[in-house]
Length: 295
Image (spheres, rainbow, N blue to C red):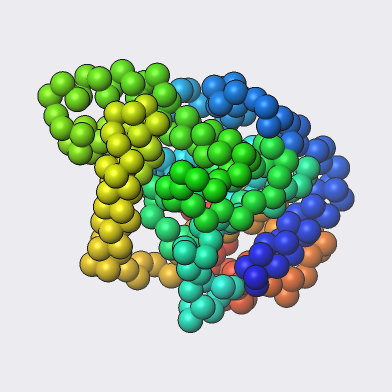
């Protein structure tokens, strides 16, 4: 897969750059064993990211939640890249049915790649799922909407459970569900809780199914509805947007700062910088301006 090879190239450059400048290994990479309990894993992740259990209350939407956690994970030392195309070829679209995200484990330069053709709720779940893989020290190619009940490996179950617990802490979910269900039906309750937790219907429906609040058929219906709503929204969306903002969103800010410093100090050629970021001289220069403007 070309995108995988591109990200391996990025990871190798970052690893070499960090080694040359004396960076230590990241202790959280591979720092978790598979026999850990979900609550303990979630506590570990919250401590790493320095977030509270109700961190989502400060966000207005799944999009804002994704951007917040992406920045926190990047600040921790994980390179988070994102795109919906192969390289800069707009005719080669990355299909979410083939993969949603992947993780490449490395002690100095762990990397997460997110397929930007997914919904923000999907990207949010994938981001946490892949971060869990990095904590476990295992590479991953993720292509599940948290919808599979059977045929899921033990590692995938661990990563799914971690992502769900960060997004929708179980004890808070139970408290909110019991309060809402007194006044609303199942669908209205899930819609209301999605607004509170700033995440997608599928995660909440799975929480409800695991607690036996809804049956499997209802869970599947909620999951399908979430996908359908996203596809309809995508079809009716205005699309477009600022080209350089889109390009800048694909690249991890910490990686780009490291790259700019290396170029300015003569360790990396501009031609290599263009290849690492899938840009040309004009795009690279404009992207640098955009990235400097991001708080």
